[in-house]
Amino acid sequence: MKTLIVSDSKCDFVDVLESCGAETECIEFQKVLTVNLEDYDSFCILPEESGAYLEARFREKLEKEAGKGKKIFLQAIRGFQDILCGEPTDSTKSRMIYLELL
Image 1: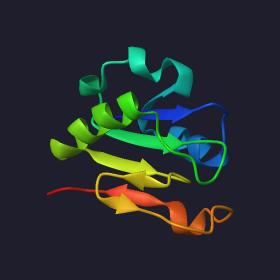
Image 2: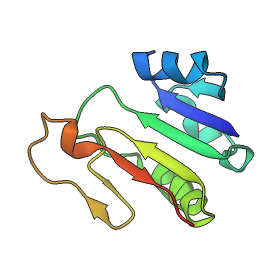
Image 3: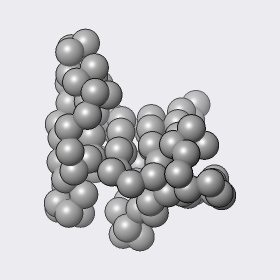
């Protein structure tokens, strides 16, 4: 399984994924629109700020991949597909979205 990690900075979670032998590739948010998401089996989206929104073109591409049943983990994202996280924006606890469609 090949996982695309989208993050502007390296964090402990990325270190854990890489240390357990997962096949990963990391890319910054500003470059994500140039990547073919069809090449990946799963996605891990880690913005620096809690309460962030995904850029609309990227969200659309990612939702298309979710529709194919690919696994997606989003941290600190306010909304994705029909899931919308309201206040508080300072808590990542209420902002983790994990999709696994069967």
